[in-house]
Length: 362
Image (cartoon, rainbow, N blue to C red; front, side):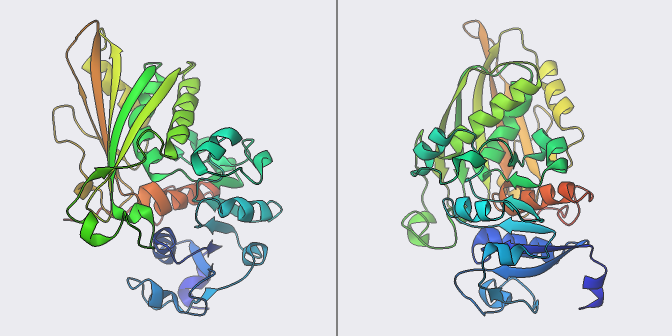
């Protein structure tokens, strides 16, 4: 054991460490001042050093190990499931009696409605009884107190994080009703480490295209989150999200723009106050001044920061149009970094510990 590892208070394991999400978790945990990455498991590349698979990593002394999830969790303080959707459901269930805290990065425990899971993920959930709220939704800006007390956290999706953060203050104020329309573009890393028709570089690098129009699996997750935000403000939210995702020719990042109709009497001062109230104590949300620069991916790339810009249009037909844009890194705040943020809260650490470095530039 090195002198550095002797100073660390908690041990963590990453289950499923060969993908992009696993790579980000490994990178962040290696630099965490209070958590030691003790082991990484996988069903492929077994026995290979971590740095042989993820070329950005230094020598760690760790190799990819193959073992059952309960064995991997034994003796750990926290377990990260960096597994594909439909795989985490079974693995997570096998950890129900584990002493460690568990954070799942897939979509398998985010939804409360088993029928919505079956519709959007294409299979019946193998453990629908676990969708009863015992897995806390890991969006700190919405559920910080619950995450602190949680033993199981379902970390949000990248689109869901980006879109919901732009709309939660509006929902909490009771202004989010009816049809909400969103378009959002994402980088190729959101499709995972293994190439497909949608991520093959020659057809991605100079192209943009919509996909999963009105049927993306994050749609019910976002609606569920916005209804929860409205309930926190004492409101209902009879809303429907019309979401069109775009494939963008960049490796990292999400830029999401949502269009909301608000009452004609709504003022810019009121909207500014809603965002300030929601995010003044949120360490990673930067609400940009009205009339200033708009949210853009390059300003947040490689970081936990989310830039939020908004514009309130003039009155027309008895209402006003509010346009909200958010930019985030899909692998950090939209993935591994947010999972570490939840881990920090669950372990009683400073919320930004190990994850508050500035963005890369350019």
